[in-house]
Length: 281
Image 1 (cartoon, rainbow, N blue to C red):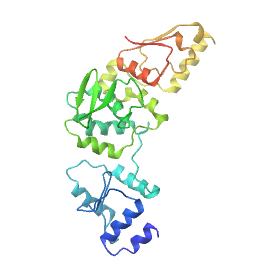
Image 2 (tube, one colour):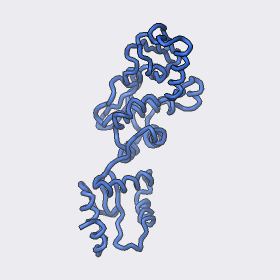
Image 3 (cartoon, helix red, strand yellow):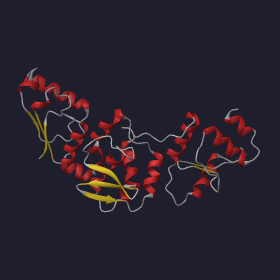
Image 4 (cartoon, rainbow, N blue to C red):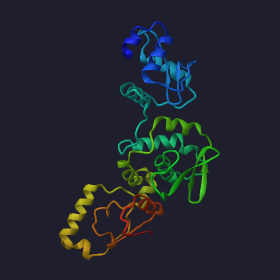
């Protein structure tokens, strides 16, 4: 019997709850003031079609009025759960990177004691590029660790702790980590987009689109000849994380320097232009 058919035959709220529990294969749930509650998601059930989804959601919001809530992600998660038969979290992708980062700062970054705003991006990447136990990259500028079963961050030899861990739990109930493998290096290369605007302007930290890279290589070939990548030594004095160099076919002829040591660390972690001389300057 389908979920729709079971709901049509429901005679009480308990029947509604049981229908959803069975259809979604929920484990580790409880039925209390919140009609169905798991670690990842809360449900409000009604046994009549006269109660709108909006009214049900409003009632559920009343129960969690002290917590941060995320309607868009909640609805997306439920729809995917119904569609696929399981609970999934939202993937972190290039399309939602800035949105996810802003929410991370609100829920997690602001709770990290003593950290500078310009370092949020480094801690953010340390957090998302980790499955909770193991990092996806070696030698990232910052590292996610655990102390007394609580997440802490290591940056520049200093340990940063959270003043409140509830936001951390809520954030990772919404999003999946780490990002898919095909996105990881690209996301790290977009660190510049997460740096505060005033600092980005001061340092000239701006992402170089690949179309601009292609045009630059065309112009260099036109000016210096077909063999310029083999015959010339190149020094990019503001390389960032190396987006301009990734298409060079002879990295041993490249010197790459940047203002921030963190950029060098990202290049090493993503194995960008391994044969080049990469250094902070």
